[in-house]
Length: 175
Image (cartoon, rainbow, N blue to C red; front, top):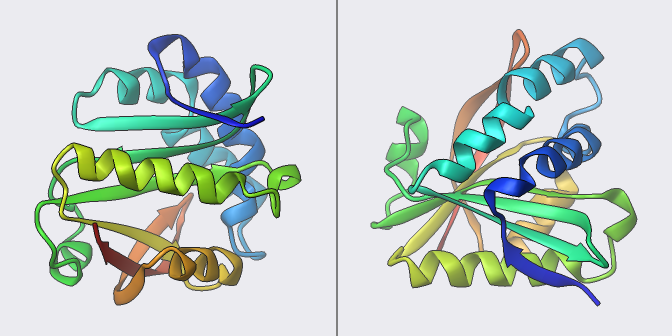
């Protein structure tokens, strides 16, 4: 049975391992191994997760079974830092769904849906009226999943992975 819980400071290493196992799944096929490695090193390393977990404006939820992490989400309770996202996402107060990653073996098992429900409930509980996210325009599977969960495309932004900028859609939904 899958359990959803709030991550704690002791989860930083496991989250970094999970990020290393799942980040590439969301990248377009042209993303180089070097760019993925740079992003993992610069954004999703254990030290980054230690900082995220200590940040009161962030909340990380994990989906696990028998102590094994299968997925995680990260909410950021702040105004969008990206100018294009800030202009596109109009519901305030907002919470960014900054990360939503699951191991490939969980796809189709309902884990993502349970994690998304818990994540949006947590955003609502913290006072957010809306949630927004950026998703690569080539990630059709993720876009379908987000649309199924009530998100709609409201704009576009750029997202840097390694040395390359990618084109993202900005999606938003009311809570």
